[in-house]
Length: 487
Ligand code: NDP
Image (cartoon, rainbow, N blue to C red; front, side):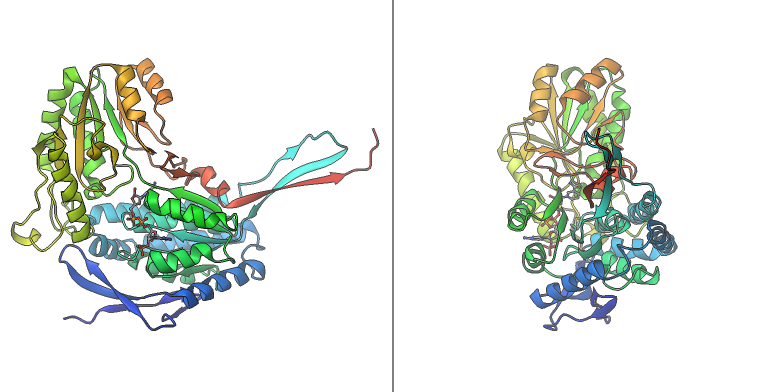
């Protein structure tokens, strides 16, 4: 076996092993083989990292330097990420199973995030307020302090950048904890942050299990804010733990997003565009449009066009430029998705296409799964209510708009969704009625670094990206200066 890369923890500007000396193995899901080892952080390492971040916040230059200086540092990091795009993308693809062209785009999006917030650092300011008192009243936007960023395995690099870029731009210090399945791109980001000149202690990276290192970070008294992306159940536990110290939290959680197709839409176009909106990233996407509500009169046409397009998607080696769908992140994740495919059939939906594990040729070793399309599903079925986090679409017919909207909203989640129609009034009416943080009309693009992203209901609290994302990492201080006037 080839010698595996060994990765250490980034704490206070230096790389070090875990105090216990323990490590864990990171796998390549395409070959199901080990590809690297990382230090397994324990309580002592969590404490070291938080203390370093605390010192850097309380005594170090980062929160006190001119916003323009912080911005220069972050612009350097943006440029370094772009310079290393291919290397980071390759690591991400090997570690996550993500098609290389998606990885390149996601690394580019991560770089753009640093570019955007580097620019925003000098354009985010308070207000002067005409209060009922003689004097000057104004607000300051100040950093919150030590931010813990906990990210999942489905979009490891961009999720890390969504949190770290605004947190750093606002003057906070950060401890980043990547998912244990996919920590390699976050460690690479740590290396580039040092090269960009981010001072020691300002940006720390800890690898280790969420159940231990993650919990220890959330409970640590030296932490001011937790920014988490992951499962709703984990978010709920974090929220409960954070309550003890009234820590600030933002949560980006699960989704079960609708894809609403009205009969007047360009059905062919909607069907073609909808395939990667649910099967992209092998369906492991919080925004996956996994419930298609299709008006009865175009239901057959949509299903036929959707399946036809699905058959054309290239499933294969994620390092191949042509590949559109790679393996799932692990065999365990595939097994979990397969259980839902069985469940859907038991619940009475028709498996109209796919859903079989792929055992042919070079795909046999990896956790590949052919995307599954269920027809005749209802919104009451568990496959329509629970986040499957794999390539499974349920197509649900509707005839009555009001009833369809009620079903769309009859979900624990409210993250994303699409509406397909040529009727502007209908589009605007539907936009207002769907309870979701992000929507797109005649498109599946709903994530832009300049625009707020986040969920209603159990899909989360707070917004990332855009100026709302920066506000999430600041406190507002109101100041009144009396001017001595008496009337
Ligand atoms: P998890 O909630 O299992 O894990 C997410 C992160 O939290 C990982 O780093 C994990 O560490 C850590 N973690 C796990 N348990 C705890 C804990 N008790 N305390 C602190 N940290 C913990 O989610 P997944 O990694 O399985 O990610 C998939 C989920 O993420 C899906 O539900 C998806 O919808 C959601 N998601 C939401 C997005 C959004 O913006 N709304 C975007 C992308 C994904 P470890 O890996 O070591 O267990």
